[in-house]
Length: 109
Image (cartoon, rainbow, N blue to C red):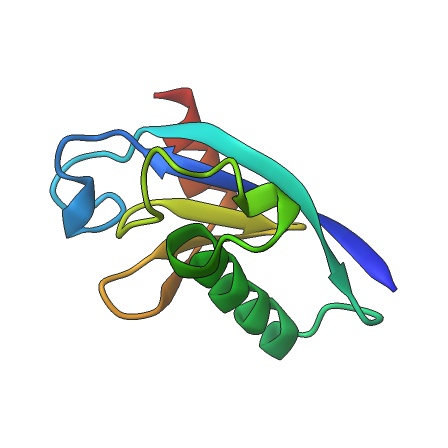
């Protein structure tokens, strides 16, 4: 069993609902941090499944301890979830992988 640190960043840019860095540069603020358990080494498929779980927990189901305090804003297009060493932006449909530079630039703004 492997526990990966997971951090959710809200994109506070005015045009964030158009996507990460689409209409204007993304501005990320950390909103939540928790660990997610993985059986063994996290495969790309397991990370994608974890992203869907995070999205579901923060928008619909609120059953996990880390999701119960999440009541101020839903996880939306342009927001980012970092699982371990991978970063993913919520896209209009699915997820878009982000580079380290994209993530660090958006956090620094």
